[in-house]
Image (tube, rainbow, N blue to C red; front, side, top):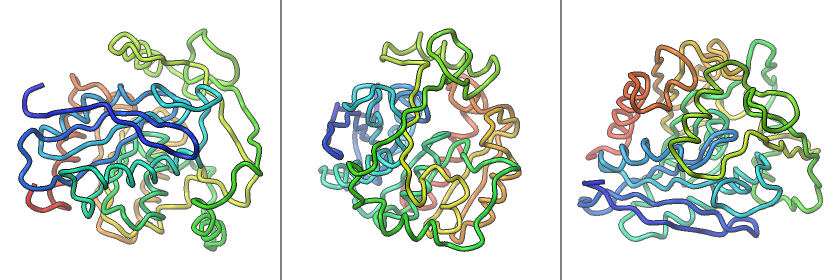
Length: 306
């Protein structure tokens, strides 16, 4: 694609090799700010290709990678969704990209989509190298979500997220299905035809090894990085929430997303896009273009000069 360059990259994370692609503006002025980007619950890094390219066309470097156990990255069990290892994966992606030539290590934004938007909030609150956070269709919970009256759980995570020896905490493996396709076993995470259509279209568009079967890996810990209401109030860097007005994913309820947004004690912006969760992922649709415009406006404001 004209205007950008890209290369396949890999880096180590917790004994596994994570793989992705590093996009750069073809003619950057000095060093470029970078967006570190990983995919949502059961999808793949390739499915973020359009967004990564559009960011790079606008002058930002982008590292997009597959979470451990997914896509081109190593790790077992395959399609095992491990929140804490994904958080450490972001940590190691930041370390890797900050060492690359042409990257401004002082201007690092983390991006998360759906489930990874929660991980992006956590890494934004826990890793001092992060300069900004973008969350597409953020996972903040629903009306049943109880917000903590004290910071005990978050402070435990702050102390242990990066150093805890996970070999001492064998995870329980819970099989689920992303959507109501026939493949796999277990509860369906996202009901409705839009989830099926999204998965079917992306499988057709990209040849990556996608699976409707996902295994949620859960460890018994004093606090978890899948507790949706925990990180927002601890964010101290500029943050953008891009919310789908008619989000059909149960843990992306509008009212709770707004409540989390209100808790952010930092410069913050919200873009509300018409339609639903998966409409933001289709670059031929207006919701995608609205989300992209909001992202670029935010990034240019945060990283003045781009």
